[in-house]
Image (cartoon, rainbow, N blue to C red; front, side, top):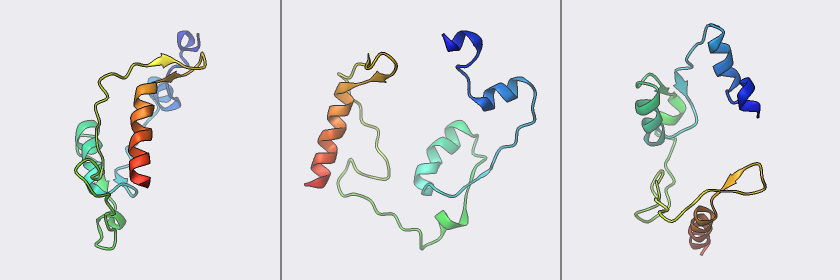
Length: 108
């Protein structure tokens, strides 16, 4: 398997293992601050700043109505089980069904 010869790592991980200097890009310009807060605190030790475009008053939140549909949501699909789909990638039919149900309700 490719993981046995070291290909299970990203290019970034391989360069770091060779002691290449890395630089943290410390400003993000895409996510609303309420979304970027979680990865920033949990993965980047609060080192990432939100760019001026996402902190300006013109960058409005367009949230879907309802308790579940805030900026983001974690949905526990208790009965979901991953299975090997086409022999190369994993899929979770129960999670896919839940997503389909939610999208269907949004369209209605």
